[in-house]
Image (cartoon, rainbow, N blue to C red; front, top):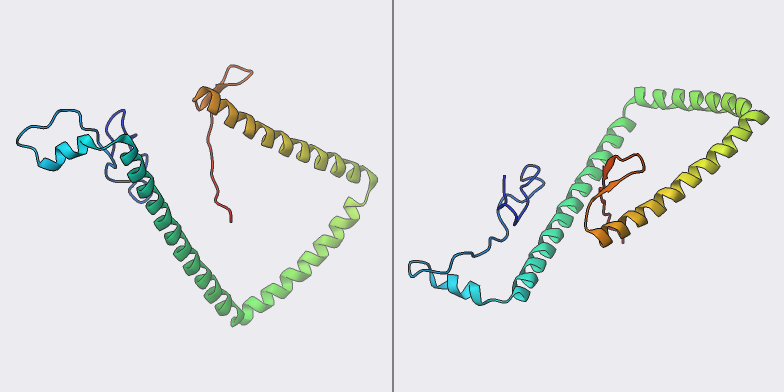
Length: 175
């Protein structure tokens, strides 16, 4: 595990996902004459200096991770294209696709006849409305949880039944 207690959390996973070395360790003891000269220079650097370095390091790490993901996605797409090419050359696969389309068409016709009844249509409308209401409430809850975290600085909240719930945030990059 990596991390100095109360400075950096230990890694929860392997170095594949998490850092395997400390990014920063504080200088607690004053320098002695046996320590190198750059040790005392580090004490003179301002906190702003370290924030800029840390942000620069973080940006660099994120940029490298984005490049790795981009390369992996390109490799995955090439493998998928190669697989599609191999399947197109297989006569059994062509026959399978034809049979599947016939089965889908038959299934769709039968389902359509069943779903056309009045009772089923009523339930479908109610289900769609309920799904939309749940979606809207989840979006509102997400924003409320972010606001709660900002105000209280904690990732735990007690629900109406007294159960402690832990928040988990997810981030997605979009263009």
